[in-house]
Image 1 (tube, rainbow, N blue to C red):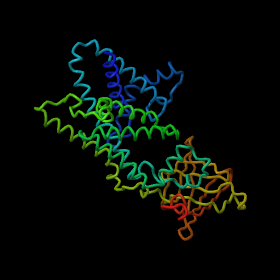
Image 2 (cartoon, rainbow, N blue to C red):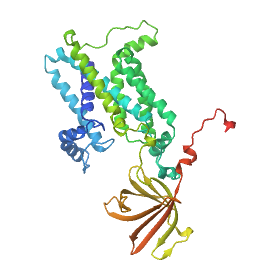
Image 3 (cartoon, helix red, strand yellow):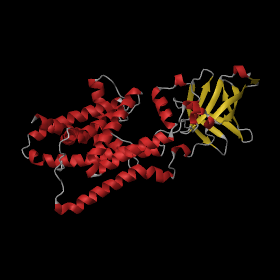
Length: 405
């Protein structure tokens, strides 16, 4: 009885997490709004009343306080639902059927996540090529999570290798005959993902733990098979779950399966077909994207000597940011928008203050000049574009021997 109750709680907890933990889907973004509509006020009240923390925004995003509270609430609701169902006599008649439906849903959901992350790696949409500002930041100043992300982004081969394993695990899970192999692969992959997220302080800890929990949950019915496999006993091939669809509904069952597969493929591949780009490293970048070495600064009528230049470099980031690097390697970033026709950059700081900058790019010598008004004077910065793609870390190379470099 206790085992049955714990399994019911785990089943409903996993089901609620699939429904309400917002994931950045490509086909729809309604999940965030639904979760906020149902749980937003409760999350805010729980945070302030129980934990004494007032949240300015109750929307749920990765590893925010709101997400931890949401998972806690979903676990409590799973217990309450399980207790209520115990009081319903007919629940035991339908329990196996409901659990079987949950299992089917969870298989498709886990396969979707593995396939999506696998394809994102292969097409360099997850671990993308490091931006110039990161490449010119001293190693000791880079946060561990960004360091890991950047290192992964430098190797296309490893992205393809790791992404292929995730795709293979997803495909094995979708095929009933190879499902056990896929779940074992998923367990190994997600154990590594969780270790990386904790070891490098990457902010997907809670969600990766949930995917690991889901994998373990789906593996539990296979424990006897795994035991037989490792104990060299004959492996039973009997079906593990009650079949939900009876023979008269074979067509409906097949339709739902193909619909699920179609939605998974649409979710995974839609952004790539929409953009027409299947390699994030070659995706279209903002105008004048790159790194610029500061060669001259003029304040009013005073041209600063090289040794007095407060800035070392400035960068135009692929996500439309302008970043300035001072002589102590500190970075200051601004949201960037521009009017190419008028030759104006508009920089917005974190207090939403905007600064207009007139720019001129000289193609002949790759000099980008910025002019703006500050501290009662006209200011001018001239920077020369540097070929950051020639940096050592971005060079392709492979050596069988140490002394063959």
